[in-house]
Length: 159
Image (tube, rainbow, N blue to C red; front, side, top):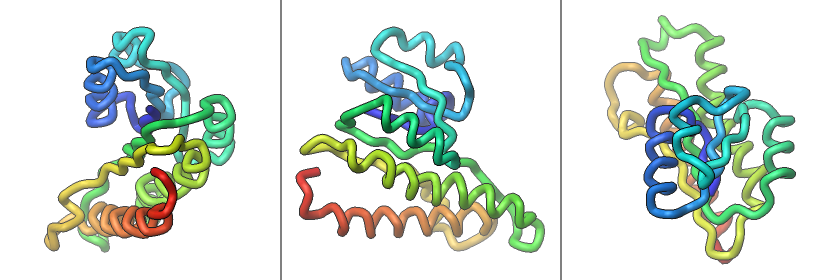
């Protein structure tokens, strides 16, 4: 199992739960080394630096990892604020991480999926709420739609 964005928050909690039930986890995040929380997970959890916006990081991870039975695309950032108050740099960063990070993660890791493998992409219920903080919600909604397209594309494969 490979989890992106696993150094903290929901990704770390997923890693803890899967390790606790006996699964082997590859926890990835953009930091060059595992933090204390990831280290505490022991030998069942391997940490790998992976910036989801980096082609080189994704290619290196894919080459080193081999087969994957569960791919959890969890890396993401929260962005809030009215559209006129969020800078374009912030919009681009959010899209690069939250949407394109998932797209590129699929491109890198789908070829490594074993028969019967699962893909999980985390998002937020906030993408469905029509008020406030549009910058974050718009890109989450696009990620939700991307996953629907991926589901259709991979339907005939044995995933």
